[in-house]
Length: 94
Image (cartoon, rainbow, N blue to C red; front, side, top):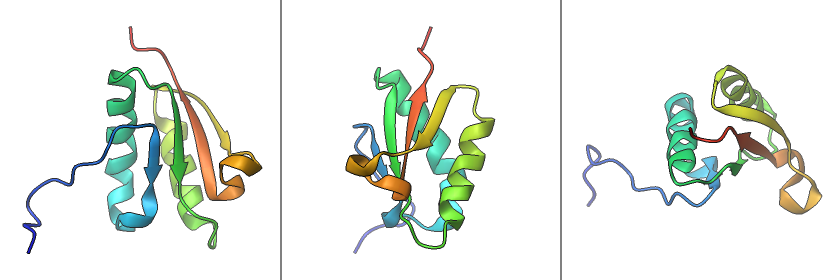
């Protein structure tokens, strides 16, 4: 039995799979994960949001557009998940 008050440990490896999270957590999770990646020197991140109806992709893109640490982002190429994933390029940490 797990304690829900304990924060979930997410590996900081440049790949964030949102399938394992509740949609309401995405708004805080994405910026926190990107900041952690940037602190580790990971400047290219793949966010897997799935294809579905596109709502989660829209939410993720909306979040990314507002983050000052994001240099750019785009739908992944076919080998990285196509429109079920987004590749994010982060600005260098100065």
